[in-house]
Length: 169
Image 1 (cartoon, helix red, strand yellow):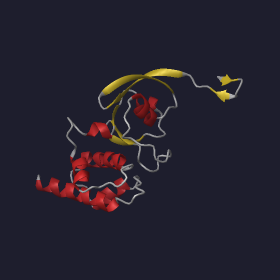
Image 2 (cartoon, helix red, strand yellow):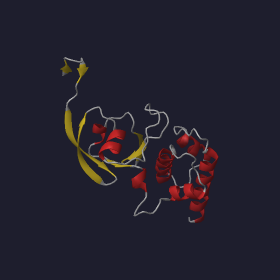
Image 3 (tube, one colour):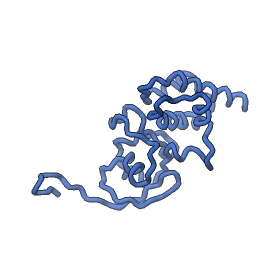
Image 4 (tube, one colour):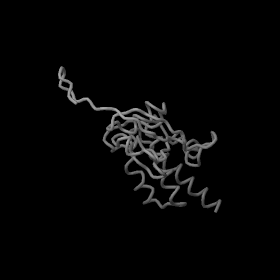
């Protein structure tokens, strides 16, 4: 439909059920509304960030059915009947997961803007591999941009986590 006065295309809205961190909500959105905005606007979760809007910086990373997905450009309608986990949903019963604990211990953030995306990305990796090697870690983090340069602290936190996992068997 075209708005004759302004010549703008008007997209119709539809209702969809989206599940984020175990909570299902019925949202009324256009078919092109990115998942990131549904998370922030409809679920009021602000840990997932808009960095570049081009799926190049990783700040918008979430887990979808356990796999990392960048959410800033992907339409939310793609994620109906999927389980979306944001940084807020990674901790269980107000207990930080092991990656979050290690980040806290090593102060692995400066401004913190990219941190949630990095933790989500590492959660995906560590859920799939108990002790990833350095190449796997670097490959996993290659899509995560940190403008502050907290990379050294992030790697210390990750190395600590790997050592802890090795000690615990």
